[in-house]
Each structure stands twice: as C-alpha cells, then as structure tokens.
Length: 139
Length: 161
Image (tube, rainbow over the protein chains, first blue to last red):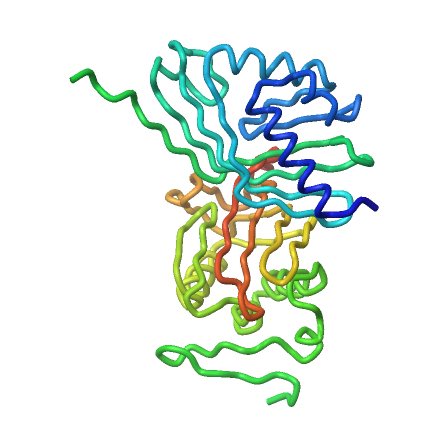
C-alpha cells in the first residue's frame, strides 16, 4: 500500500499538471481503463477521452483547480476542490451551462479517486456549490 | 435508564443521548463509528443519532441548510412523519479523527403526497433514490459540519397507487 502522504503529494502534482494544461503529464496519472464521471453526469472512459474532453473545455475557458483538502484511506483518495472557470469566449454549449465571454464560474466539488497502484482507475466528482459571476459591465 | 447510555438535557428540554459505551469504544471517525450513526438514523433513534452532533453543527443537506443539533432533529422528525428514509453507506474514506468523506445512497419513500417537498413534489408510494457524496468534519468526537453533494439521481420508482 502506497504511503498516504506520497499519494496526496502525487495528487497535488496531478492537479498542477491539469492547471498547466500539460496533457502529456496528465495522462501518466490515469490507468489505461480509467473512468471519469464529472459533476454534471458526463462520463468518459479511457485516457484519450478525458484529454479530448479537457482540451475542448480549455479551448473555451481557463480552469484553475485549487485543492482545498485531500486524504487517503486504503485505495481511495477523497478531495475537496474548488474550480474557477473563466470564459475566454462565448461558450453556449459549456458543460456546466452557457457562459458568455468574461463570465466566471466557481464550483466547489467533492471527489473520489480510486487507485490502481499509483494510477487513477475511477474518478467521480459531485458539485457541492456553484457560483456564477457575470462579466463586469463596461465602465 | 441503562447504565451504558447517559442522557443529557439540552435547550428547552430536548433530550440528547450520548452514544452507548460500545459506540464510544469505537474510534471516532472510523467507518464502524459512522455506520453506527447511520444505523441510529435509519432506526429513527433521534437521541442516539443526534448525539453525534456538536451543539452548533452546520448541516448542508439536499433538502435543507440547518444549524444546530436541535434544528436537525426537528427537521428530520418532520420529514420522517411523512417519508420513509434510509441511508446506505456505499464507500468511506477516513481522514483521521477530524474528517471523512462517504458515498451514501439515500432512499426516500413517500407515505403521503407532499407537493412542496424541497427537492421536488412527492406522490404517496413514490420511491426516490440518489447517490450523494457527504463530507463530515468533526471535533471532540462530534460532527461540526456536514455537507452533502448530489452525485447522481437514480431512476425513480413511481407510486403504485
């Protein structure tokens, strides 16, 4: 069984790679058969499906994730994360609802990461709170 | 009164029971300790399950946001008068004595029509299930904050009436 402290440190490295949009590093954290279910019910299977999804999300928005808490018990890591999305352009089909350029969306989520060795084999996230802030009107 | 269960009086006469000695022997924040809480909840043993709450516990559920052990008990007494509720623990991730996260399945069955139920109108006999991720914070062996996030609704079973 991996050292829980190392597993949490590795998780923070995973989120840092996500925030850098470093997809090559990102996939190194996933089991080949990884399943990811995000807060709106969207389910992705396999590394490439996840990367393709996030490439598309990050084309319309910037997303920064902050790890508020993370801990490990056995082969599962639990985390509370806060995501900030900033719409770079109008995104009427955005996964969490339409966004206009300059809008910000904050999601506070609880997530379970099931581990196969060091790799994430199943990731599930549920949104606890969401807050949308419209772009500041022009002065 | 059983010797292994003490009762204290809180607020305006509401009785809150401390966990039994058997429960107290369990390590706080473990799955077994949490399962004992859920079992008391499912049994509608209000004194026993409310003994897990700090007096000023913050509760952010799917149907209500509440503060204080007495407010939570009053809320559930009202709900359980009209709805049968059962919670099942599907997975548990312990974070020591101060926090844990659980995946729970909540099953609600309406015993009567409840058109203005907070999460949507309920028809007598209807069953509604959901999977929720619940994040619990603890201090001194009691919940200080409970937050629930909806992961997935499950297919409803309509009333047979």
